[in-house]
Length: 188
Image 1 (spheres, rainbow, N blue to C red):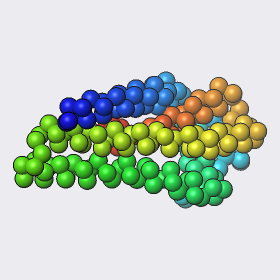
Image 2 (image 1 turned 180 degrees about the vertical axis):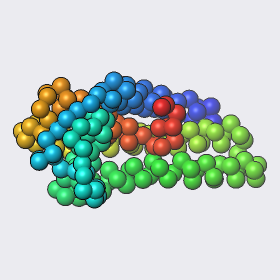
Image 3 (image 1 turned 90 degrees about the horizontal axis):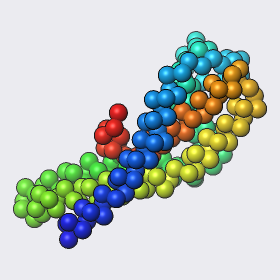
Image 4 (image 1 turned 45 degrees about the vertical axis):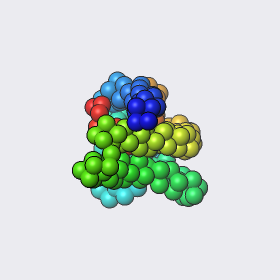
C-alpha cells in the first residue's frame, strides 16, 4: 500500500516542480535582473511600505513583487472571500507538511508505521498541498492581470519591454508562492 501511495504522490510532485521551474524560476532568472525605470508620480508602493523614499530604478524582479502585492491588496478589497480562500490554501500548504512530519516521526518511533511508510505519507501530504496550491493559483493570476491592465493604461513604465518583464516577474512570483515552502527549498 505504501508503494502505491509513494508512486501516486510522485506524479503531482514532479508536475508541480516542473511547473515551478518553467513558470517561476526560469522567468525570474531571465527577466528578474533587468533594470527598469518607472514614473514615481503614479506608481504606488506596496501596501505596508512606509518608507518615504522610493527608487525609480529597480530590478524587474522587485517591481514584479510590488505589482503582485498591489494586485493582492486590490483583490482583497474587491473580493475578500476569494482572496481569503487563496491565503488559507497557502497557509495550509505551509503548516500541514511540518505537522505531518512530526506525526510520522512519532509513528515510526512507536513502531506503528515503517520508515518507508512514513516517508510515503509525508510525500503524499506534500503532494496534496502542492496540488491544492496549484488549483488555487488561477484567481490570483486573474487578479494580477486586472492590475496589469491598470498599469498599462497609466503608463508607469516608459519602455514596453520593461513593462513586459515586470509583468512576467509578477506572474512568476505568484507561481513561486503557490507551492508549499518544503518544495520551494528544493530548487533555487
